[in-house]
Image (cartoon, rainbow over all chains, first blue to last red; front, side):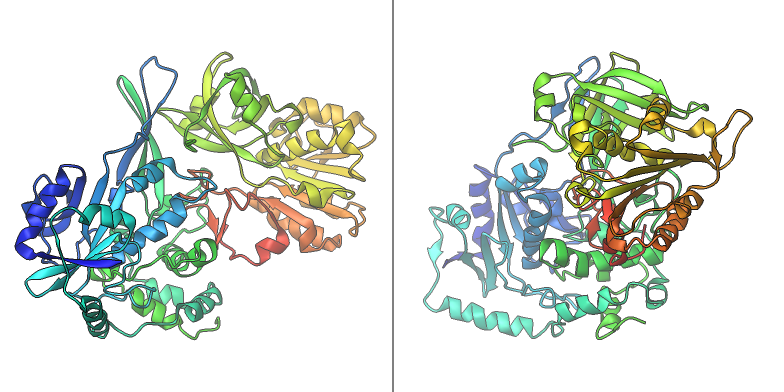
Length: 340
Length: 279
């Protein structure tokens, strides 16, 4: 781990250098919305935002991808798992960088490795943008992260004055940052960043004990509170689409004239059809069971199965919910509960 | 790296109508490529995804005994697009398969025990796999008594008629076939599965029950098994849930923290009692 430095007006040129070797996915502003997209030129990237509307998970898990296809008359299906050009995800906030550590546990484990995710993962380096612009909806410190947390990042930029300090974290990060003309950072910058981290962390609501919360949730599966807490939910699913850790998917086929394809598309536990069986029976028939599933999955089941909370506290679901359903309030009401 | 979403090609050897109304067929499949057959193995109670690229894929319990792992039976009820296309397959056609998936019946726990098999309707498929397996001479001696209770709504909906006729003749298996409603030609037993179970004489200390069937049958069979003295750890249920991936990733088949596709589909009642009632 070491530090380099880059001036704000040098970032565009630095990205142009990366573009010669990598596909670079960076925050861009389109129609007033900040989101991640592959850039063609360094100057397209913007870094003056709090967080993007949608998370960058699509870099590893596109909203729609073709798994298999076959042309008419061909028996053998083609697998669309080919290695891609190496990708740099640039400018993701630390919460989103950390979310990939969670997705890795779901898709990149040894037992049944998801080759589509895995091949993209092998080709990805993450340069995060330390969070110096927190929002009221942020709660990353509750879920184990922090505004300048390096978890999941290969390198991290931290805004300081008229430039960024470049924190080089992994060997992959070093590969990106070395021999690109970046100056070494000044002596004592590590200590400055540690102080800055404490200062920014203080802007975020104090963390909640999640292991205690998990026990409370496990004891409260059948409580009537689920009904009252989630009754305004529209089951629109926007929380799951914007969430950096939500990863549930559907597999759906298409038979276009001449080519048959099997696609994977994002799905949502908030939709009634998600668990609807062929017989018509649905184990999660109303918003109550579906919303409970979303909360329990993230804050209990993921902990059991992946030893990591399925939430990074980015706050997108709080910010964008059309009926202002606040996951922090839902969780808060279960704290210290023991059933009933 | 192997791709868990890539099916292997299977050849349709046979497509047999099981029920009088034609709504259920059993497909017998063989491996189109020898190497896929060699690499494949399964346990009774496991399932696989059948795939028709361009139409879709769906999970089915493997209905044949693993003694012959090169010929696989899948019993398919026609309810939607994929199952209708599967019904339309003819011998010689190709269909994709990926699997085997899931845990299967708890073979280790079953050794040296008496086995009570309770199946209803379409849910009998993997129990047929287990029964066929257990009746193999080398395997049969691992178990004490074997009792099979199998029911359907009416005689026309009874599956695997040839097996039932053969099992009836055996002395090392007790077979109780029942229908909810008889028709004019039915000479067998009439009555629901739970009532037949309630009338059995079994030794609860040495018996393990394997149960699969529709929710109504399960609801009334479990109390009957409890009445017979079977503890929850001695009752195993094979569950159904909507599935897509079969490998614990797509996120829809969980009951609490347990995924039916990887942790199940077979659970003991003791395990299920610790999980939420969301199935």
